[in-house]
Amino acid sequence: MESYPPLIPYLVVPDAAAAIEFYKTALGAMEIVRHHVPESTKITHAHLVINDGSIMLSDDFPEMRGGKASTPEALGGSPVTIHLQMADVDTFWERAVAGGVSVTMPLADQFWGDRYGQFTDPFGHKWSVGQTKASLSEEQLKEAARVWFKI
Image 1: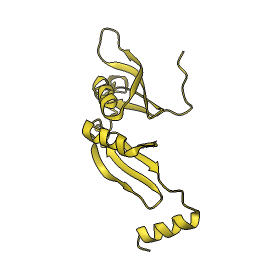
Image 2: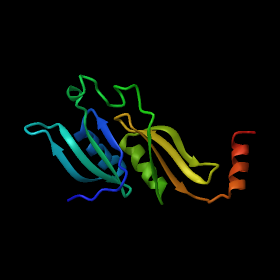
Image 3: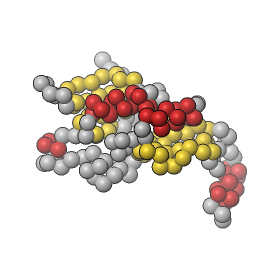
Image 4: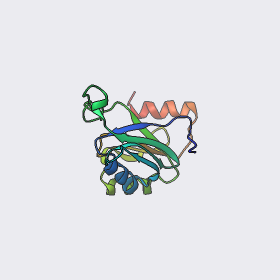
């Protein structure tokens, strides 16, 4: 029996098989399980591990929701960003960019002490990645924010 962490993002994609392969190649995902609709290539459930964290995903099944698709593209985008905190963000970033993500915020050292960037995967899901480079006190963080925002 699978053991799950207490919180897992569940992604809906238009082509789960392609998404799984993309996440393996670009994000270093490890596939834990994959279930299909009988006699079909459509995936009803998959569990992946990326950066020691779990995500689950499936193909979109609009026929199960009154004909309404629920992928980010069908909904006009997603307001949710999946964040990965790690020890070597530069290596991860290089792999993701080489794998075909669309950079929305370049990886850079940020005022709050992290090396941080954002991208969107080819299936419309937004991701951020970070590596803590410096732990700032509350006062240092306030001052860094004042400088950053030119206040």
